[in-house]
Length: 493
Image 1 (cartoon, rainbow, N blue to C red):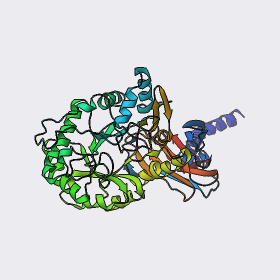
Image 2: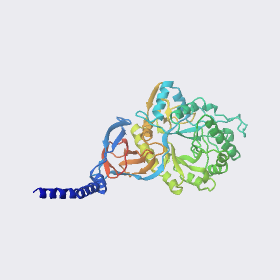
Image 3: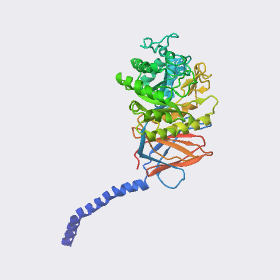
Image 4: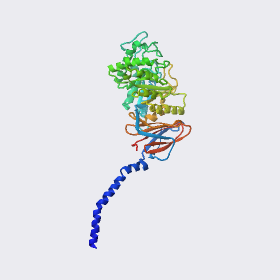
Protein backbone atom coordinates (compact mmCIF):
# COMPACT_ATOMS: atom_id res chain seq x y z
CA UNK A 1 0.00 0.00 0.00
CA UNK A 2 2.86 2.36 0.85
CA UNK A 3 4.44 1.60 -2.53
CA UNK A 4 1.12 2.32 -4.38
CA UNK A 5 0.71 5.59 -2.44
CA UNK A 6 4.20 6.73 -3.35
CA UNK A 7 3.64 5.86 -7.01
CA UNK A 8 0.37 7.80 -7.12
CA UNK A 9 2.00 10.83 -5.44
CA UNK A 10 4.87 10.70 -7.91
CA UNK A 11 2.42 10.58 -10.83
CA UNK A 12 0.54 13.62 -9.53
CA UNK A 13 3.78 15.60 -9.12
CA UNK A 14 4.87 14.67 -12.62
CA UNK A 15 1.53 15.79 -14.12
CA UNK A 16 1.37 19.08 -12.19
CA UNK A 17 3.52 21.17 -14.64
CA UNK A 18 1.42 19.94 -17.57
CA UNK A 19 -1.79 20.86 -15.75
CA UNK A 20 -0.47 24.31 -14.84
CA UNK A 21 0.68 24.96 -18.44
CA UNK A 22 -2.73 24.23 -19.98
CA UNK A 23 -4.52 26.08 -17.21
CA UNK A 24 -2.43 29.23 -17.79
CA UNK A 25 -2.84 28.94 -21.54
CA UNK A 26 -6.61 28.82 -21.14
CA UNK A 27 -6.57 31.89 -18.88
CA UNK A 28 -4.33 33.80 -21.29
CA UNK A 29 -6.63 33.00 -24.20
CA UNK A 30 -9.56 34.38 -22.26
CA UNK A 31 -7.74 37.69 -21.70
CA UNK A 32 -6.49 38.20 -25.26
CA UNK A 33 -8.68 38.12 -28.36
CA UNK A 34 -11.69 36.67 -26.60
CA UNK A 35 -11.25 39.16 -23.76
CA UNK A 36 -11.31 42.16 -26.12
CA UNK A 37 -14.29 40.72 -27.94
CA UNK A 38 -16.16 40.20 -24.68
CA UNK A 39 -15.36 43.74 -23.59
CA UNK A 40 -16.48 45.13 -26.92
CA UNK A 41 -19.71 43.14 -27.10
CA UNK A 42 -20.64 42.38 -23.55
CA UNK A 43 -19.02 44.89 -21.21
CA UNK A 44 -19.21 48.67 -21.58
CA UNK A 45 -16.24 50.79 -20.64
CA UNK A 46 -18.79 53.01 -18.84
CA UNK A 47 -17.21 56.35 -19.81
CA UNK A 48 -18.89 59.20 -17.96
CA UNK A 49 -20.59 61.76 -20.19
CA UNK A 50 -21.04 65.27 -18.80
CA UNK A 51 -23.67 67.46 -20.40
CA UNK A 52 -25.00 71.01 -20.41
CA UNK A 53 -28.35 72.20 -21.80
CA UNK A 54 -29.86 75.50 -22.93
CA UNK A 55 -33.57 75.42 -23.67
CA UNK A 56 -35.54 77.70 -25.93
CA UNK A 57 -37.85 78.65 -23.05
CA UNK A 58 -34.80 79.72 -20.98
CA UNK A 59 -35.65 77.33 -18.14
CA UNK A 60 -32.10 75.99 -18.57
CA UNK A 61 -29.24 78.29 -19.51
CA UNK A 62 -26.01 76.38 -20.09
CA UNK A 63 -27.17 74.30 -17.13
CA UNK A 64 -25.17 71.21 -16.26
CA UNK A 65 -27.36 68.12 -16.07
CA UNK A 66 -26.76 64.84 -14.23
CA UNK A 67 -24.04 62.87 -15.98
CA UNK A 68 -24.82 59.70 -17.90
CA UNK A 69 -22.69 56.73 -18.90
CA UNK A 70 -21.96 54.91 -22.09
CA UNK A 71 -23.01 51.28 -22.13
CA UNK A 72 -22.61 48.42 -24.58
CA UNK A 73 -24.59 49.32 -27.69
CA UNK A 74 -27.92 47.54 -27.91
CA UNK A 75 -31.33 48.07 -29.47
CA UNK A 76 -32.21 50.30 -32.39
CA UNK A 77 -33.25 53.91 -32.84
CA UNK A 78 -33.83 55.41 -36.29
CA UNK A 79 -32.29 58.61 -34.92
CA UNK A 80 -28.82 57.35 -34.09
CA UNK A 81 -25.97 59.84 -34.14
CA UNK A 82 -22.88 57.79 -34.97
CA UNK A 83 -19.63 59.42 -33.90
CA UNK A 84 -16.33 58.21 -35.35
CA UNK A 85 -13.30 59.89 -33.81
CA UNK A 86 -11.01 58.14 -36.30
CA UNK A 87 -12.43 60.16 -39.21
CA UNK A 88 -11.20 63.73 -38.88
CA UNK A 89 -11.70 66.94 -40.82
CA UNK A 90 -10.47 70.52 -40.31
CA UNK A 91 -8.72 71.89 -37.27
CA UNK A 92 -10.53 74.36 -35.03
CA UNK A 93 -9.09 77.79 -34.18
CA UNK A 94 -11.77 78.87 -31.74
CA UNK A 95 -15.15 80.40 -30.96
CA UNK A 96 -15.92 83.92 -29.82
CA UNK A 97 -17.22 87.39 -30.56
CA UNK A 98 -16.53 90.64 -32.35
CA UNK A 99 -15.00 92.98 -29.79
CA UNK A 100 -16.24 96.29 -31.13
CA UNK A 101 -15.03 99.66 -29.91
CA UNK A 102 -18.38 100.14 -28.23
CA UNK A 103 -18.05 96.76 -26.47
CA UNK A 104 -14.63 97.77 -25.14
CA UNK A 105 -15.97 101.09 -23.85
CA UNK A 106 -18.83 99.42 -21.99
CA UNK A 107 -16.65 96.77 -20.34
CA UNK A 108 -14.05 99.34 -19.33
CA UNK A 109 -16.75 101.38 -17.60
CA UNK A 110 -17.30 98.55 -15.11
CA UNK A 111 -15.43 98.69 -11.83
CA UNK A 112 -12.06 96.98 -11.83
CA UNK A 113 -13.39 94.11 -9.72
CA UNK A 114 -16.56 93.63 -11.79
CA UNK A 115 -14.65 93.92 -15.05
CA UNK A 116 -12.05 91.39 -13.93
CA UNK A 117 -14.78 88.98 -12.86
CA UNK A 118 -16.48 89.30 -16.24
CA UNK A 119 -13.26 88.81 -18.20
CA UNK A 120 -12.41 85.73 -16.13
CA UNK A 121 -15.85 84.35 -16.93
CA UNK A 122 -15.46 85.04 -20.64
CA UNK A 123 -11.85 84.14 -21.36
CA UNK A 124 -10.93 81.37 -18.93
CA UNK A 125 -12.26 77.83 -18.81
CA UNK A 126 -13.70 76.47 -15.60
CA UNK A 127 -16.94 75.70 -13.83
CA UNK A 128 -18.46 79.14 -14.37
CA UNK A 129 -16.32 80.22 -17.33
CA UNK A 130 -16.87 79.86 -21.08
CA UNK A 131 -13.38 79.89 -22.62
CA UNK A 132 -13.75 82.39 -25.48
CA UNK A 133 -10.74 81.78 -27.72
CA UNK A 134 -11.18 83.99 -30.80
CA UNK A 135 -11.94 87.71 -31.26
CA UNK A 136 -12.59 89.97 -34.22
CA UNK A 137 -11.74 93.66 -33.98
CA UNK A 138 -12.05 96.58 -36.37
CA UNK A 139 -9.15 98.55 -37.81
CA UNK A 140 -10.41 101.99 -36.92
CA UNK A 141 -14.12 102.51 -36.37
CA UNK A 142 -16.85 99.99 -37.10
CA UNK A 143 -20.53 100.91 -37.15
CA UNK A 144 -20.59 99.90 -33.47
CA UNK A 145 -18.08 102.57 -32.47
CA UNK A 146 -19.25 105.81 -30.92
CA UNK A 147 -17.99 107.82 -33.92
CA UNK A 148 -16.15 107.49 -37.22
CA UNK A 149 -12.36 107.45 -37.29
CA UNK A 150 -9.37 105.91 -39.06
CA UNK A 151 -5.71 105.94 -38.09
CA UNK A 152 -4.70 108.61 -40.59
CA UNK A 153 -7.30 111.31 -41.18
CA UNK A 154 -6.01 114.64 -42.53
CA UNK A 155 -7.71 117.96 -43.34
CA UNK A 156 -9.88 118.05 -46.47
CA UNK A 157 -7.86 118.31 -49.64
CA UNK A 158 -4.68 116.89 -48.10
CA UNK A 159 -3.04 113.46 -48.34
CA UNK A 160 -0.43 111.64 -46.26
CA UNK A 161 1.43 109.37 -48.66
CA UNK A 162 4.24 108.74 -46.15
CA UNK A 163 1.69 107.94 -43.39
CA UNK A 164 3.44 110.46 -41.13
CA UNK A 165 0.22 111.07 -39.21
CA UNK A 166 -0.54 107.37 -38.71
CA UNK A 167 -1.50 106.66 -35.09
CA UNK A 168 -3.61 104.15 -33.18
CA UNK A 169 -3.93 106.63 -30.31
CA UNK A 170 -7.74 106.50 -30.44
CA UNK A 171 -7.55 102.80 -29.52
CA UNK A 172 -5.43 103.45 -26.43
CA UNK A 173 -8.38 104.57 -24.32
CA UNK A 174 -10.54 101.44 -24.49
CA UNK A 175 -9.68 98.73 -27.03
CA UNK A 176 -5.95 98.29 -26.44
CA UNK A 177 -6.14 98.33 -22.60
CA UNK A 178 -8.97 95.79 -22.71
CA UNK A 179 -7.10 93.53 -25.15
CA UNK A 180 -4.09 93.61 -22.84
CA UNK A 181 -6.26 92.42 -19.94
CA UNK A 182 -7.70 89.65 -22.10
CA UNK A 183 -4.28 88.52 -23.38
CA UNK A 184 -3.00 88.38 -19.80
CA UNK A 185 -5.73 85.80 -19.14
CA UNK A 186 -5.43 83.94 -22.44
CA UNK A 187 -2.12 84.62 -24.21
CA UNK A 188 -3.04 82.22 -27.02
CA UNK A 189 -6.25 83.98 -28.03
CA UNK A 190 -6.52 84.57 -31.78
CA UNK A 191 -7.43 88.01 -33.12
CA UNK A 192 -8.61 88.84 -36.62
CA UNK A 193 -8.77 92.51 -37.63
CA UNK A 194 -10.68 94.11 -40.48
CA UNK A 195 -11.24 97.69 -41.67
CA UNK A 196 -14.68 99.16 -42.30
CA UNK A 197 -13.04 101.94 -44.32
CA UNK A 198 -9.61 103.25 -45.35
CA UNK A 199 -8.69 106.85 -44.46
CA UNK A 200 -11.17 109.04 -46.33
CA UNK A 201 -8.45 110.79 -48.37
CA UNK A 202 -7.73 107.44 -50.05
CA UNK A 203 -11.34 107.06 -51.25
CA UNK A 204 -13.05 108.10 -54.44
CA UNK A 205 -15.78 110.02 -52.58
CA UNK A 206 -13.67 111.25 -49.61
CA UNK A 207 -16.42 110.00 -47.28
CA UNK A 208 -16.59 107.43 -44.47
CA UNK A 209 -19.57 105.86 -46.23
CA UNK A 210 -19.23 103.97 -49.51
CA UNK A 211 -16.89 104.99 -52.28
CA UNK A 212 -14.01 103.00 -53.75
CA UNK A 213 -10.32 102.77 -52.86
CA UNK A 214 -8.43 105.03 -55.26
CA UNK A 215 -6.00 102.82 -57.22
CA UNK A 216 -3.29 105.45 -56.74
CA UNK A 217 -3.33 104.66 -53.02
CA UNK A 218 -3.32 100.85 -53.13
CA UNK A 219 0.31 100.61 -52.07
CA UNK A 220 0.13 103.23 -49.33
CA UNK A 221 -2.97 101.47 -47.99
CA UNK A 222 -1.04 98.18 -47.88
CA UNK A 223 1.63 100.01 -45.84
CA UNK A 224 -1.19 101.24 -43.58
CA UNK A 225 -1.94 97.58 -42.77
CA UNK A 226 1.74 96.94 -42.04
CA UNK A 227 1.96 99.96 -39.71
CA UNK A 228 -1.20 98.83 -37.92
CA UNK A 229 0.10 95.31 -37.29
CA UNK A 230 3.42 96.70 -36.10
CA UNK A 231 1.75 99.26 -33.83
CA UNK A 232 -0.45 96.60 -32.23
CA UNK A 233 2.57 94.31 -31.83
CA UNK A 234 4.35 97.14 -30.00
CA UNK A 235 1.43 97.07 -27.55
CA UNK A 236 1.88 93.33 -27.04
CA UNK A 237 -1.07 92.42 -29.28
CA UNK A 238 -0.53 89.91 -32.09
CA UNK A 239 -2.91 90.17 -35.01
CA UNK A 240 -3.32 86.62 -36.29
CA UNK A 241 -5.21 87.54 -39.47
CA UNK A 242 -6.67 90.43 -41.44
CA UNK A 243 -9.30 90.75 -44.12
CA UNK A 244 -8.86 93.56 -46.67
CA UNK A 245 -12.40 94.86 -46.15
CA UNK A 246 -15.48 94.18 -44.05
CA UNK A 247 -18.50 93.41 -46.23
CA UNK A 248 -16.90 94.64 -49.46
CA UNK A 249 -20.21 94.46 -51.35
CA UNK A 250 -22.06 96.65 -48.82
CA UNK A 251 -21.32 100.35 -49.41
CA UNK A 252 -24.23 101.59 -47.28
CA UNK A 253 -22.98 101.07 -43.73
CA UNK A 254 -21.20 103.74 -41.70
CA UNK A 255 -18.26 103.30 -42.18
CA UNK A 256 -18.03 101.24 -45.38
CA UNK A 257 -16.21 100.77 -48.69
CA UNK A 258 -17.18 99.11 -51.95
CA UNK A 259 -14.44 96.72 -53.09
CA UNK A 260 -15.23 94.31 -55.92
CA UNK A 261 -13.53 90.93 -56.20
CA UNK A 262 -11.18 92.13 -58.95
CA UNK A 263 -10.15 95.10 -56.83
CA UNK A 264 -9.48 92.94 -53.78
CA UNK A 265 -7.52 90.49 -55.93
CA UNK A 266 -5.33 93.27 -57.32
CA UNK A 267 -4.83 94.81 -53.89
CA UNK A 268 -3.73 91.47 -52.41
CA UNK A 269 -1.44 90.31 -55.20
CA UNK A 270 0.19 93.63 -56.07
CA UNK A 271 0.28 95.43 -52.72
CA UNK A 272 -0.87 93.79 -49.49
CA UNK A 273 0.80 90.42 -50.02
CA UNK A 274 4.12 91.87 -51.23
CA UNK A 275 4.16 94.48 -48.45
CA UNK A 276 3.63 91.76 -45.84
CA UNK A 277 6.41 89.73 -47.41
CA UNK A 278 8.81 92.67 -47.58
CA UNK A 279 8.18 93.56 -43.94
CA UNK A 280 8.26 89.94 -42.67
CA UNK A 281 4.62 90.14 -41.58
CA UNK A 282 3.27 86.64 -40.93
CA UNK A 283 -0.31 87.76 -40.30
CA UNK A 284 -2.74 85.74 -42.44
CA UNK A 285 -4.62 87.41 -45.28
CA UNK A 286 -8.21 86.19 -45.49
CA UNK A 287 -10.36 87.15 -48.46
CA UNK A 288 -13.96 88.35 -48.80
CA UNK A 289 -15.53 88.63 -45.27
CA UNK A 290 -19.12 88.93 -46.49
CA UNK A 291 -22.30 86.97 -47.13
CA UNK A 292 -22.71 83.36 -48.25
CA UNK A 293 -24.66 84.40 -51.35
CA UNK A 294 -21.45 85.17 -53.26
CA UNK A 295 -18.98 82.28 -52.98
CA UNK A 296 -17.92 83.41 -56.47
CA UNK A 297 -16.13 86.36 -54.82
CA UNK A 298 -13.54 84.34 -52.85
CA UNK A 299 -13.39 81.83 -55.72
CA UNK A 300 -12.37 84.69 -58.00
CA UNK A 301 -9.66 85.88 -55.62
CA UNK A 302 -8.27 82.37 -55.12
CA UNK A 303 -8.39 81.64 -58.85
CA UNK A 304 -5.77 84.30 -59.47
CA UNK A 305 -2.41 82.55 -59.60
CA UNK A 306 -0.57 85.57 -58.21
CA UNK A 307 -3.03 86.38 -55.40
CA UNK A 308 -3.58 82.78 -54.31
CA UNK A 309 -0.21 82.21 -52.57
CA UNK A 310 -0.78 85.22 -50.31
CA UNK A 311 -4.29 84.16 -49.24
CA UNK A 312 -4.82 81.82 -46.29
CA UNK A 313 -8.54 81.41 -46.96
CA UNK A 314 -11.87 83.19 -47.01
CA UNK A 315 -14.38 84.48 -44.44
CA UNK A 316 -18.17 84.58 -44.46
CA UNK A 317 -21.27 86.13 -42.88
CA UNK A 318 -24.79 84.73 -43.25
CA UNK A 319 -27.18 87.65 -43.70
CA UNK A 320 -28.02 86.09 -47.06
CA UNK A 321 -27.18 82.86 -48.84
CA UNK A 322 -26.68 79.40 -47.34
CA UNK A 323 -23.95 78.14 -45.04
CA UNK A 324 -23.18 75.39 -47.59
CA UNK A 325 -21.43 78.09 -49.66
CA UNK A 326 -18.37 77.40 -47.49
CA UNK A 327 -18.28 73.83 -48.75
CA UNK A 328 -18.53 75.12 -52.32
CA UNK A 329 -15.33 77.10 -51.81
CA UNK A 330 -13.69 74.20 -49.96
CA UNK A 331 -14.42 71.85 -52.86
CA UNK A 332 -12.76 74.24 -55.28
CA UNK A 333 -9.81 75.12 -53.00
CA UNK A 334 -9.47 72.33 -50.42
CA UNK A 335 -6.09 73.54 -49.10
CA UNK A 336 -7.45 76.98 -48.17
CA UNK A 337 -9.00 77.66 -44.77
CA UNK A 338 -12.55 78.87 -44.13
CA UNK A 339 -13.79 81.17 -41.38
CA UNK A 340 -17.11 82.44 -40.09
CA UNK A 341 -16.58 85.97 -38.83
CA UNK A 342 -19.92 87.69 -38.15
CA UNK A 343 -23.60 87.20 -37.41
CA UNK A 344 -25.73 89.42 -35.21
CA UNK A 345 -28.75 88.75 -33.06
CA UNK A 346 -31.41 91.43 -33.37
CA UNK A 347 -33.18 93.34 -30.63
CA UNK A 348 -36.39 92.31 -32.41
CA UNK A 349 -35.60 88.58 -32.32
CA UNK A 350 -36.72 85.92 -29.85
CA UNK A 351 -34.44 83.90 -27.59
CA UNK A 352 -35.82 80.56 -28.82
CA UNK A 353 -35.77 81.50 -32.50
CA UNK A 354 -32.24 82.94 -32.40
CA UNK A 355 -30.89 80.05 -30.31
CA UNK A 356 -32.16 77.45 -32.77
CA UNK A 357 -31.22 79.32 -35.97
CA UNK A 358 -27.73 80.33 -34.86
CA UNK A 359 -26.79 76.96 -33.33
CA UNK A 360 -28.12 75.13 -36.38
CA UNK A 361 -26.51 77.35 -39.02
CA UNK A 362 -23.38 78.55 -37.25
CA UNK A 363 -22.26 76.38 -34.32
CA UNK A 364 -23.25 73.21 -36.18
CA UNK A 365 -23.51 74.36 -39.79
CA UNK A 366 -20.31 76.36 -40.17
CA UNK A 367 -17.90 73.68 -38.84
CA UNK A 368 -19.75 70.98 -40.79
CA UNK A 369 -18.97 73.13 -43.84
CA UNK A 370 -15.26 73.40 -43.01
CA UNK A 371 -15.10 76.60 -40.96
CA UNK A 372 -12.27 76.79 -38.45
CA UNK A 373 -14.09 79.27 -36.21
CA UNK A 374 -17.44 80.85 -35.42
CA UNK A 375 -17.83 84.47 -34.27
CA UNK A 376 -20.99 86.26 -33.16
CA UNK A 377 -21.48 90.01 -33.59
CA UNK A 378 -21.10 91.66 -31.08
CA UNK A 379 -19.79 91.14 -27.55
CA UNK A 380 -21.56 93.95 -25.67
CA UNK A 381 -24.14 96.69 -26.16
CA UNK A 382 -25.92 99.08 -23.83
CA UNK A 383 -29.69 98.92 -23.12
CA UNK A 384 -30.30 101.12 -26.19
CA UNK A 385 -28.15 98.88 -28.47
CA UNK A 386 -25.31 101.39 -28.63
CA UNK A 387 -22.76 102.78 -28.90
CA UNK A 388 -23.00 103.06 -32.68
CA UNK A 389 -22.16 105.55 -35.39
CA UNK A 390 -24.76 107.71 -37.07
CA UNK A 391 -26.37 105.29 -39.49
CA UNK A 392 -24.77 102.27 -37.79
CA UNK A 393 -26.70 99.26 -36.54
CA UNK A 394 -29.47 100.31 -34.12
CA UNK A 395 -30.81 96.79 -33.47
CA UNK A 396 -27.60 94.81 -32.86
CA UNK A 397 -28.04 93.05 -29.53
CA UNK A 398 -24.77 92.16 -27.85
CA UNK A 399 -23.99 88.87 -26.19
CA UNK A 400 -24.02 91.05 -23.08
CA UNK A 401 -26.17 94.04 -22.23
CA UNK A 402 -24.19 96.35 -19.96
CA UNK A 403 -25.97 99.23 -18.31
CA UNK A 404 -24.15 100.78 -15.37
CA UNK A 405 -23.27 97.89 -13.08
CA UNK A 406 -25.93 95.61 -14.59
CA UNK A 407 -24.79 92.78 -16.88
CA UNK A 408 -27.35 90.67 -18.73
CA UNK A 409 -26.33 87.57 -20.67
CA UNK A 410 -28.25 87.38 -23.93
CA UNK A 411 -28.86 84.61 -26.42
CA UNK A 412 -25.58 84.90 -28.35
CA UNK A 413 -23.68 84.46 -25.07
CA UNK A 414 -25.17 80.96 -24.83
CA UNK A 415 -24.87 80.26 -28.57
CA UNK A 416 -21.10 80.68 -28.45
CA UNK A 417 -20.64 79.23 -24.95
CA UNK A 418 -22.07 75.86 -26.02
CA UNK A 419 -18.96 75.50 -28.19
CA UNK A 420 -16.27 77.71 -26.64
CA UNK A 421 -16.58 76.16 -23.19
CA UNK A 422 -15.96 72.65 -24.44
CA UNK A 423 -14.13 72.77 -27.79
CA UNK A 424 -10.55 73.98 -27.37
CA UNK A 425 -8.32 75.56 -30.03
CA UNK A 426 -6.39 72.76 -31.70
CA UNK A 427 -9.39 70.44 -31.71
CA UNK A 428 -10.48 68.72 -34.91
CA UNK A 429 -13.95 68.10 -36.22
CA UNK A 430 -14.74 64.39 -36.33
CA UNK A 431 -17.36 62.38 -38.15
CA UNK A 432 -21.01 62.40 -37.09
CA UNK A 433 -24.32 62.24 -38.95
CA UNK A 434 -27.40 64.48 -38.75
CA UNK A 435 -31.11 64.05 -39.44
CA UNK A 436 -33.25 66.33 -41.57
CA UNK A 437 -35.96 68.02 -39.53
CA UNK A 438 -34.78 66.44 -36.30
CA UNK A 439 -31.54 66.18 -34.42
CA UNK A 440 -28.71 68.28 -35.86
CA UNK A 441 -25.22 67.83 -34.48
CA UNK A 442 -21.50 68.36 -34.85
CA UNK A 443 -18.65 66.47 -33.18
CA UNK A 444 -15.12 67.40 -32.17
CA UNK A 445 -12.06 65.79 -30.62
CA UNK A 446 -9.85 67.96 -28.42
CA UNK A 447 -6.07 67.67 -28.31
CA UNK A 448 -6.35 65.97 -24.90
CA UNK A 449 -8.50 63.23 -26.45
CA UNK A 450 -11.81 64.38 -25.01
CA UNK A 451 -14.80 64.32 -27.33
CA UNK A 452 -17.55 66.94 -27.66
CA UNK A 453 -20.89 66.59 -29.43
CA UNK A 454 -23.23 69.57 -29.74
CA UNK A 455 -26.79 68.58 -30.64
CA UNK A 456 -29.91 70.62 -31.35
CA UNK A 457 -33.53 69.54 -31.60
CA UNK A 458 -34.96 71.34 -34.64
CA UNK A 459 -38.12 69.22 -34.65
CA UNK A 460 -41.58 70.00 -33.30
CA UNK A 461 -41.56 67.63 -30.31
CA UNK A 462 -39.08 66.23 -27.82
CA UNK A 463 -36.86 63.63 -29.44
CA UNK A 464 -35.06 60.65 -28.00
CA UNK A 465 -31.96 59.80 -29.95
CA UNK A 466 -29.06 57.42 -29.54
CA UNK A 467 -25.45 58.56 -29.60
CA UNK A 468 -23.28 55.67 -30.75
CA UNK A 469 -19.50 55.78 -30.33
CA UNK A 470 -17.69 52.65 -31.45
CA UNK A 471 -19.33 49.69 -29.75
CA UNK A 472 -20.93 51.82 -27.03
CA UNK A 473 -23.92 54.14 -26.90
CA UNK A 474 -26.35 56.03 -24.73
CA UNK A 475 -29.81 57.46 -25.33
CA UNK A 476 -30.94 60.96 -24.50
CA UNK A 477 -34.19 62.89 -24.77
CA UNK A 478 -33.81 66.48 -25.92
CA UNK A 479 -36.76 68.89 -25.64
CA UNK A 480 -37.82 70.80 -28.73
CA UNK A 481 -35.72 73.88 -29.41
CA UNK A 482 -33.02 72.88 -26.93
CA UNK A 483 -29.28 72.49 -27.42
CA UNK A 484 -27.02 70.12 -25.50
CA UNK A 485 -23.25 69.85 -25.31
CA UNK A 486 -21.91 66.39 -24.39
CA UNK A 487 -18.30 65.90 -23.33
CA UNK A 488 -16.45 62.70 -22.46
CA UNK A 489 -13.04 61.07 -22.53
CA UNK A 490 -11.78 57.61 -23.34
CA UNK A 491 -10.81 55.62 -26.42
CA UNK A 492 -13.26 54.46 -29.05
CA UNK A 493 -13.73 50.71 -28.88
